[in-house]
Amino acid sequence: MTSICMYFQVHQPMRLRHFSVFGEHAERLDERYFDCDLNRRILEKVANKCYLPTNELLLRLIEDNHGSFKISYSLSGSFLEQAKRFCPQLIESFQRLAKTGCVEFLDETYYHSLASLFTDKREFAEQVRLHADALKELFGARASTFRNTEVIFSNDIARLAEGMGYSAIMTEGLESLLGWRSPNYVYSVAGTDGMRALLRNFKLSDDVSYRFSARWWSEWPLTADKYARWLAASEGQCINLFMDYETFGEHQWSETGIFSFLEHFPREALKYQHLEFQTPAEVVRDNEPVGEVSAENPVSWADIERDTSAWLGNDMQRECFHFLQDIGTRVRSRGDDEMLHSWRLLQNSDHLYYLCTKSLADGDVHKYFSPFESPYDGFINYMNILQDFSQKADEA
Image (cartoon, rainbow, N blue to C red; front, side, top):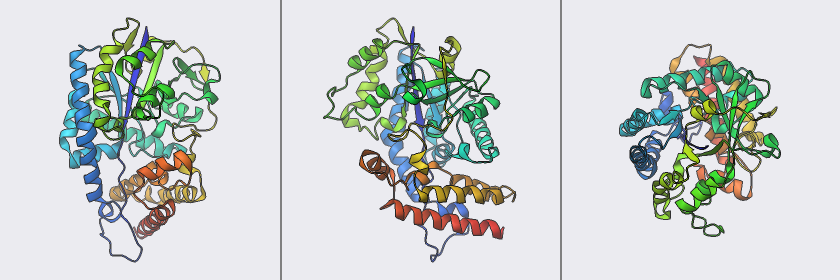
């Protein structure tokens, strides 16, 4: 049997206010730095276009296929906080999915941060623990699979995750990791005691998440039966389809036919007797690793380079990252929960992502998500906030 392993990343950052050092600002840190109205509008918009209708469709597909259709999610803590505050029915819809027993929830850093790249790894461990506690409280789930922010992966990160009790970790199916080998197998991670790695089949994943509505694509239009036929012809233990949840209804609008595609896909795939749907934990449970992967330097699923340059590729990004890390040494010693929470929200990887100065297709993607006119405007705004926050930390 070949397992189809579908995983969806669900994340919304706490977007920043346009902050000037000369303006009047609220004393409460969450009101001082974060744009509550903007975050509410975006969360409600995406919930209506993507989250709620996709959750409803997937719940129906699970029920219609009598447990044969299975999926997995990673829900960032900043997404969960906004959902609880602005759209409680969204949490309830994920809870209904959890009750089916056909959904696996994965752990990550609560704040969707780059804490795994900090010099002091205690912050990373604490954010992972916070995320695990949130999953337990909201969904009664205890994850065995770890998925780092933007699937940032290295041998060191895998060892850290293994030390926290996780048995599997997700990463990108890069040639630098695989060489001539296929991502459609389970691998072990070099330097660990048996940590398993599940590697994203980026071609088949991107066929849906990026190329689905691309009329220039030679395979357009992509239909459910055609896609299932491609999967059926793929050799291996597992076909790992990892993508942003916003693919459905937000990045690929309803008018493209993306919901119709998703509705028919499980039935078309299950017509092939050698295909089945499994969660990441089930894939690892049922398959022995066929080899080993190793990444001394971190890799990710972002941009053409598939490394950390989407967040740390220029001097502006690195300056903010190091300043942010430096502030933490003071904040963590204060014992001020509000300040600690705000510092961690400022770690949302998106804030650094908006400062990217790449060109061509990667640059267009960064600009699409950024609320700023340019990376330089974003840098000035973010640095103003970090400097103000640093002063607040010293005053405290």
